[in-house]
Image 1 (cartoon, rainbow, N blue to C red):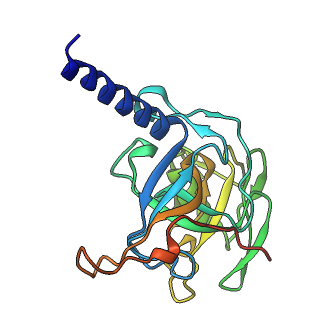
Image 2: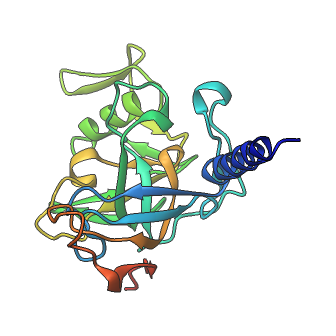
Length: 231
């Protein structure tokens, strides 16, 4: 066998290993915004552990949604997930990538704009009222695969008035570390578990994108562990 053909096989083998790792173990994502500026900076590349909450099926357009080794998200984790509001792409794993911190999970209660919310979870029943009617309508349409509409202050699902609803998914509330930012769950709402990719574990590269190729490297942040917030 010629020497050049051996190198081709080595290269193909390395590419196959990288593909396997990307699909079934770890992925690298770029931090583009300043939404997490107290933890992550724009221009940083982070490694995401896809097994942190169980491995989600890759290529969901072909294989649908499944998750192996499912585990709950812990409060304070920095989580990578798909945009729950994006509707242009029907397949979840084709949606834009978001990175935020988990503030609350299934069954938790939190106060948002002086309104107390109960975080929905699989099997829980929530009564429709004036406070949650609009939020429930949006969630049913976006994530519960229902046709919901509000008419004359009444929530209808499949043209039938709805007094209560039993949820089919677990949900989480994600927030920014930047106190002045409200483009988190205050904007896009609850994040269903099937949108979760994994936990951000460490920064492997950090550079100020505003600087030229020779400057702006944040050497002290290379391979820095991303720690969960502890209350």
